[in-house]
Image (cartoon, rainbow, N blue to C red; front, side):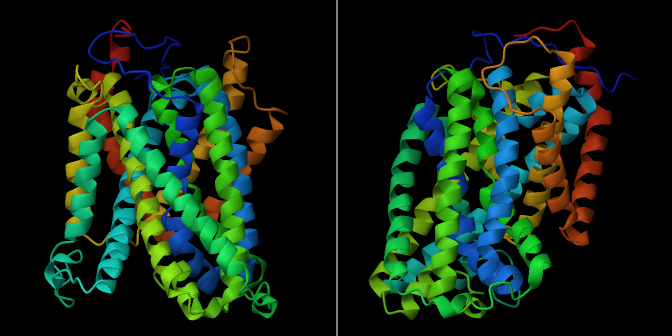
Length: 464
């Protein structure tokens, strides 16, 4: 069995049933990146990470996580500008390392996007219900959360509805999706800046003491936790075939969106831990809570609106990335070919979009998946680890191929990126590792029973 057969460097056909429409530019990609990154991480996880792991040293945790992401973003940018096809890390590793590792990586990315969407939709539902309760509107208990006999909940109806609505939007066309995302991004950026400016006047420097209450290990554990907050920029590379000038625009979108969000995360963590003691931040809505403590209730309400907008765009990009990933895997034959069929009118993979939407809606509606954020982190870190090493491999295998963007100081930067991601993976708990290995084992079973035999590399390569 040739488990490491590599996919040839052939661009997808511009015609046929698997053609995607090129409508996105650098600004669209930057907005999609910001839309994917700023959400649950900034509105929810900042408080938990500060209270349980890093204290005011959370700002260092964000810097460490950002450092790992910047290194990985450079590697992603080289691949995206060199191999501008759908599939992200899956497609890159197919060329650099071969089919088996590509499948493992693609399968783990399915977990990343799926669990991330489920977890974020649960947070979205919580913020929406809190906002509605402020207006005296109460969703019946049975419809307010995933199944929990003690709490009396049966289905998280708001989470199901938002997943299905976003799935519908994704079927309408990529340009329409990008426009909606841009509107939501403007709203949440305005709200985040409002919090930073307002909160600045209530900062008490004594709240930053002690700065590292949990020591250096707490900062590292915090970095591994808040890494979830940066997940999303990698999803941009799944849109490569829908970008007008991918060699130029993809690196711009990836790096600029990550830079913008890193600055905002650092500022928010500084202001948040300066307003109130870190020990009081272990709440579901820490940003809004901090403002309520200083009697800024009106702005706290606006923060809730921004949080809802922020989580909406995260869901949008996660579901977008999931559908494009399945599209790419299906086109290669490793999953049923029907998932790569494109609707002639909207130029979108409608079948895979609705399949993803319905499955995630059912999971998030009935099963409490909001505690599985670390599974998303480990899947993403593994992808970053492989892509970083892939840059070195591709430089050796195809040294003369045209690259729109080149990582500087190869192999030092890719090796440093891989080492940083590996270190953060090491600091995730054993429960996370067990879940990751079980999911990977299930993926291997599917590959050997279906994917290997149906791979297009079993036949003469056909780029259509």
